[in-house]
Amino acid sequence: MADPERGPPTKPRPTNYNYNSNQYYVGTSETQWTSWLIPMFVVANVVVFIVAMSINNCPKHNLGFADKCVAKFLGRFSFEPLRENPLFGPSSDTLEKLGALEWFKVVHGHQGWRLFTCMWLHAGVIHLLANMLSLVFIGIRLEQQFGFVRVGIIYLLSGFGGSILSALFIQNNISVGASGALFGLLGAMLSELITNWSIYTNKAAALLTLIVIIAINLAVGILPHVDNFAHIGGFLSGFLLGFIFLLRPQFGWTESRNLAANARVKSKHKPYQYVLVLVASALLIAGLTTGLVLLFKGENLNKHCSWCHYLSCVPTSKWKCGN
Image (tube, rainbow, N blue to C red; front, side, top):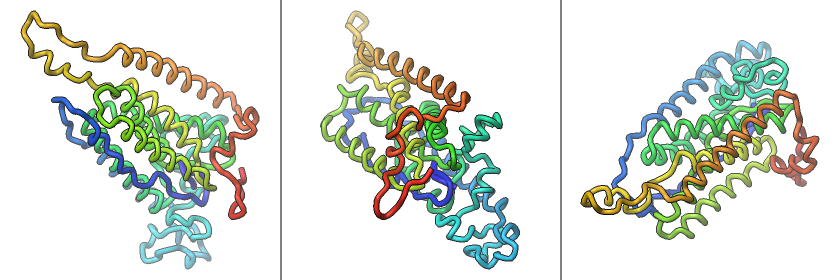
């Protein structure tokens, strides 16, 4: 089991994201949406985890070692022994059965659907709580500002992009978790700030705050058993998607529509915003297409980049980084 999350044991990642762009936003009369999609995503992840624990049924599948199951009073919902899964969750076999990302099955078993299903699975209670708290902190605010359609697209496509990059580098372990999608929302927050730069106050403070948050959470990815490639892939996908979907009208546009008929009405968006939309769209399509082609050709990008594995795990005297 893993992060996005990779094979036993896993470490929780993006923890608390408390960045609030509204404190720097000048504001207009834009619609405030009611957030319902992100809460539904949280419920869906929790339900999937409960189903996974029911199917896992530790006492039944550990005959002779049932006493090693954690929280045995939960019956079939009890957790795997901590030596196998320290995050209080199901076994790797169960996660693999339910749709964890596994390179061999995606490429040679023609199970491309695992690129999507893996983002709904979690390695354990700790993994689930860390990701769902992060999703609430980031996602609800974004959905209130931009609506469920745009935020939903960014979340799902970022998770997909994270899965692709993960499978291109991590080919000997399974990978599960929503972190790729979560990092996509972080990336979208950064590009939203950049593309709507002219309507923010305290721009430098807003940018610095967000960059520090992103850097800290990416740094956590160098720990062992954390799939930082899913984080990076999700972040890059979300960063490009933010330019496409999270444009705000330039300051004063709403008010200018109420002027006299012969008055000059401001353009809704600035020219550079349209340029960023076109460039981001081209890069996103090219990146996802190239990634899928390389993946289904069976490419292992570690062979073409001898240092890239350090992006996901840096060995120290305290731990080693295996495949």
